[in-house]
Length: 110
Image (cartoon, rainbow, N blue to C red; front, side):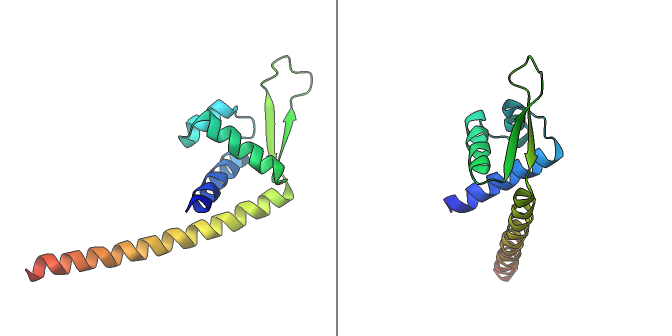
């Protein structure tokens, strides 16, 4: 389960950075509803895996100004994670639909 949650967090970070590559880690964390530490952990893990690159803005006096961009490998991984996420959520949805159907039948049958 931890791997699934980690992959889901990584997917969230990849998607958000693909849309907004100049977000600070604090802004990223706020957008995704996670702690700054978790955002930092995810970014570092994605950098270590070669999925994103981090570049400091040239001649920027604000040392916190970074640009995060997805590498070609990062774009591929984002697609793979998105597909996996859709498959898992579809399975969860189908299971929930079945459970609701059973509960309705129990309610109407008693």
